[in-house]
Amino acid sequence: MLKVARVIALAVICTASLLVAHAQRRELIRLVKESKTNKINIFVGEKLFTSFLYPDTLEKPVLYPVNASNGVAVTRGFPLNTKPGDPIDHPHHIGIWFNFENVNGLDFWNNSYAIPPERKPKYGWVKTDKILETTGGQTGVLAYHANWTDHKNKVLLEETTRYEFSASGSQRIIDRFTTLTASTEVVFTDVKDGLFAIRVAHELQIPTDEDQKFTDDKGNVTVVKGGTDKVANGNMLSSAGKAGNEVWGTRAAWVKMFGKMSADSVTVAIIDHPKNVNYPTYWHARGYGLFAANPLGEKVFTNDQKSTNLKLNKGESVTFKHRLVVDNGSKSISPETLNKLASSFGKM
Image (cartoon, rainbow, N blue to C red; front, side, top):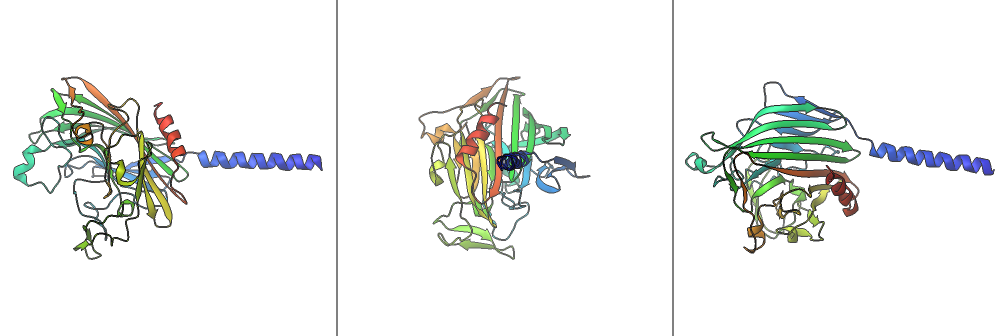
C-alpha cells in the first residue's frame, strides 16, 4: 500500500509539473505582411493579436487593433473601424502609438485627418520608411526605422523601434524599445500629451457623470447623458496604490486598466522601465479611455513645481522602453503578477 501511495503521489507531482510547464509555454508568433499595403499582421497561432499600420494616410505608425486571447479587441474602433457604441472624441487616439505634443514647437501628438490644411504646418509626422526585421517564433520581432518630420519633410529625429511580441496562455505581451536620434538640436518641451499610449475600448472606460458622444448602430452620433452609460465598467490601479481617476498625474512603475468585456475580466497594463527618463513615469491616464505613460509632462502633473525639458544635441540619442500586457480570464491580473512582469522587464 505504501508503495502504491508513493507511485500515486509521484504521478500527482508529475502531472502538476506538466500542467505548470504547459501553462508557461510560449505560443508561436507569426508575422505576415499584406501585399501592396503598409500593414504587417501579428498572429498568435492562427489568431490575430495586432497589426502594425504605417500608411501615408496616417500621421504616425500604430498597432491596431489589439486583441485579447479570447478575440475581444481591447482598443477602440474609431476612427479606423468605427463600431456601434464607440466614443468619437480625439480622432488622433488610434490603437497603440508613440509620439509627443511639443518637439521644437511641433505637435506630433494631436495630428490627424481632422486638422484643417491651413493649420497642418504646426504639426509633425512620424513617417516609417524602412522595415528592418520581421521574425516569428516564440518571440516575434518587428523592427522599423522612421523619421519625425515637419510638414516640409525636414527630419528632426530618426527613430529606430523594435517590437517583441510574446504570448503564454491568456497573456499577451508587447515590448517596445525605441531609440530617438536627433538630426538637429531638439527640445521636448515639458507638456502633458505624450508619450507611449493606447486608447482602450468603451468597456474599459471608467463610468462618468459627464455627457458623452457615441455612435449608434446606424453610424449616427448620439449623446449619452452622464451616469446612463451602461457599457463602461472599467477601473485603474497603479503600483503606487492609486485607483480610478486618482491615477492621473501620479508616478508609478506600472498601471493597469481593467473591466468586464464579454464573459471575461480583461486587463491592459503598461509597465515602465527603470532606465527610462524620469522613472517611475508620470501617468496621463484618463477615465474616458486614454492610457499613456508620459515621463516628460511633470510640469502639468506637479502644478508647475517641476519640469523636464529633454534636450538632444545633433547626433545625441535617447532610448525608451515600455511593456504592454493584455490578459483576460475570471479575474483581473494581480499586482503580484505585474510586479513579476515589471521585474523581468527591468532586466531587459
